[in-house]
Amino acid sequence: MVSPATHSSPVGLIGLGLLGSALADRLRGGSLPVLGYDLDPARREALGGAGGEVARDAAEVFGRCHRVLLSLPTHVEVEAVLAAAEGTVRSGHVIVDTTTGDPEATAALAAKLATRGVAYLDATVSGSSAQLREGSAVLMVGGDAAAFAACGDLFAPLGRATFHCGGAGAGARMKLVTNVVLGLNRAALAEGLALAQGLGLDARQALAVMQGGPAYSRIMDRKGERMLFGNFVPEARLSQHLKDVRLILEQGEAAGLPMPLSRAHRSVLEAAEKAGLGALDNSAIIRVLTARAGPPEAR
Image (cartoon, rainbow, N blue to C red):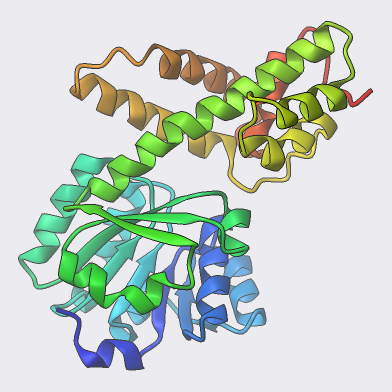
């Protein structure tokens, strides 16, 4: 159970990258003070310049905040942060982890923390950092139902909808389910635009035709013009999605599912990462699908 004191202290935030900085913006927009930390000094400076308070380290965040959000690359970094702050993570803490990590590792971590009176919610985000910043993302949360309910004021400003998906690890699993469809939609769009280009069609018109017909998906609105004009400044990095696809395949194998489309998607993403596209926006997948024809053009 979250104590009343939880709501009088700032919300802690560890990890101030693309997603973490968007979380900070949404929390401050919801009148929730933020105390944040990141290993990168530039990210800490950006938080301070935007009106957040900067902690000297992760231990200070846990020492001063009852509720702490984590926004880190994988569950490995999550475990490292918690180990480093071991002495300040205490009974009554609520940890809200937005990292897309391994569901089994997430459930094991939640069980371990529960023995110390710490509530752990895996609160994954469906949507890019830009979608989170504009308030259109969806949150999928696993963990204790009472802790989830007590964090309603924290979740409210973060997205347009929040779902409690079940026990620990359920939020991580649901994120992988949504990322199967989201990632394959993005890959299909890239391949369709690559084919339009290869056939000598007007690529912008091809996008407009797809947006106006039954092939439409919202990913076209987000990523279509990025693919056409080569704007790959990252909202969500390609390598991060490759990490998710590998987790998807692990989960599919454990469930006895063949996952042929995700296997093919992994191969394309691995080729993109090998080509040096990993740090770019995930829409850069189109570059390896148009390798022979050259970069896509809006003709």
